[in-house]
Length: 68
Image (cartoon, rainbow, N blue to C red; front, side):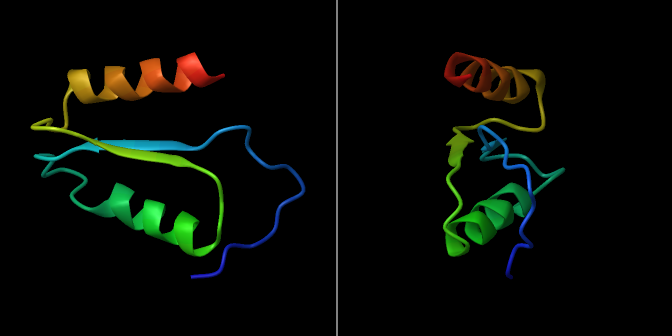
């Protein structure tokens, strides 16, 4: 999939999900793959044994804030 060009580029793209998240499944990894194919800088990681839960969300938020 080719991304369209935009005049404003985000400072940081961070994607994460839990390895046991049955709500979003592999959708975040799909975004990661699209960004990689388009050579867009981003951070992607899986939270081991995490589900669609507060702990995973908090991990993503903390990682994002530490990098801004």
